[in-house]
Length: 127
Figure 1: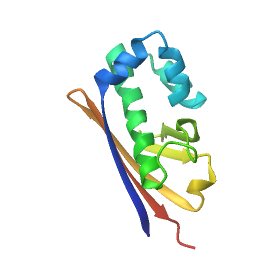
Figure 2 (figure 1 turned 180 degrees about the vertical axis):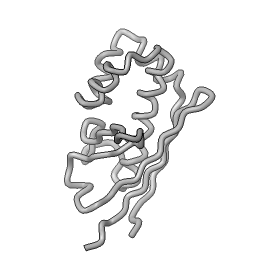
Figure 3 (figure 1 turned 90 degrees about the horizontal axis):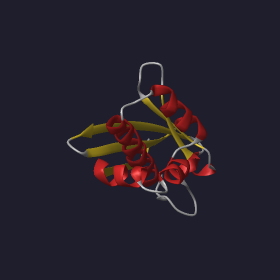
């Protein structure tokens, strides 16, 4: 049974400005998990594609937090949500907090024309 949906959109220029600023590395550490940063560093992406990747993760984590009904804040931080591709490239999401216990998350991420967007569905697992 679907218990929540969430969506988010973010401008890649905004994320690019944050990454290119003096606190770019701190921003990456705040938004991406260790595994996500390791995955990104292993890809050797061009700068524009790196911005798209980070913007997509930002949008995905915001969308997941909305689908869970709590948003990013006291109950859920960016680091609590990890988005990594499966072997076919599909974004798979894990949440480190109890807020997602017993739930299955579905996620889609897209980038185009200076925007990154994500859509998430939270589904209660049938017992």
